[in-house]
Length: 252
Image (cartoon, rainbow, N blue to C red):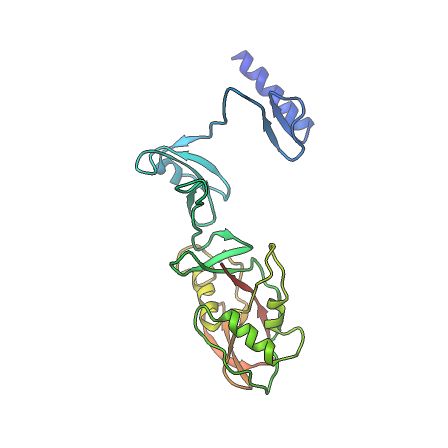
């Protein structure tokens, strides 16, 4: 027991004195908080059942070994935003697919198409802006899921105004991605329902939308375009010169 407390004191002293902790090495890598050197053993993470795991109020990034998952074979799992995931999937080259609410490829997943793809919302608002080109009809926009990117291209092809909602999204580079666009009417509503204040899936407002008002990329005519209240989910048409919040999305 005395040896244990001596070891613990040494580890705590090292952690307090230096930015990194090394186990079996005196020069831990500068990029690691904990650097373990061994050729005879590995790192053993906490082992528990799924029921014990679910009793934890887990933060994103927590890693455990679930002893009775995967038909009793066990899995090394990590807590993502919405759920626990197998860290390696069925194969080391086949990582687990994202779920709605997961942080993935630059933002938060808010829609899955059932074929391995879906839509991601930027983690915060880009700006507030007018829809643009009041009095001018661009034509050809749609309200359907999967049409926001085409809508954005259509808007910018017919409207030369700068700093409008669609252009802010199209010019955005975020998280290493530059293929962002202004969501369609239906895509905007899915954000509200799945990762916004609508809370249809019980995830809460993880998109940090609050009670703001957001533009869609769906035009009504030369004067009006669709927007959505995120306090109550209501959607309506309004003059394009109004300034509302802009939240970019991208497909994967």
